[in-house]
Length: 211
Image 1: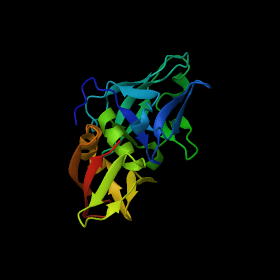
Image 2 (image 1 turned 90 degrees about the horizontal axis):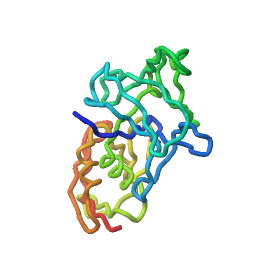
Image 3 (image 1 turned 45 degrees about the vertical axis):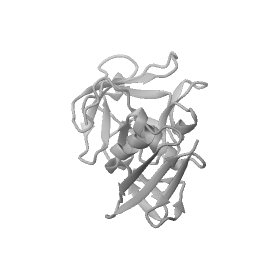
Image 4 (image 1 turned 120 degrees about the vertical axis):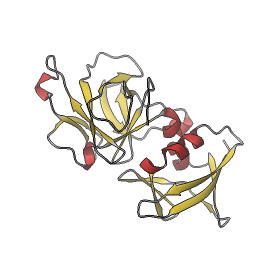
């Protein structure tokens, strides 16, 4: 679970990535087509352990812009996701000191949530994991074949850190290594995955990257 100097992209409870609206110069949660060349506009830097609390981390922009961003510290959730607390003692975010970051259903990033609940959980994904996740959800990039020989997919974001695929709910936080394997596939490459399901059991797939 150690990330070292890796940049992580934040995937929220609703199935979106933290992005940067460069027109408004503001953070926003929205779908980002990573498998088709999209890059989330904000990343988390300084995260060494995805399960540990008390780490000083920062949001960094893919494209430089004047918008200030708060200093943050991680909070452990015991779920495989993390929460983030604003820690500025001075400056424009000082009034939010101690507030928890949260995402609304509309995609707004809030800095003043009083408690850590579902909407305050985030999955910190490496670029390879995020690419694998998006590949599963994009049409025409992967051939997904069940162990029965049936073709399935693409998946869709179902919320609660789950993908819905062939009527099953895949637990995203339990299959990060599998997502990274997908993310590293070259066109024409294939791999077999056994994906854990939210309610128990597994989903066995052969994945071939076709584009």
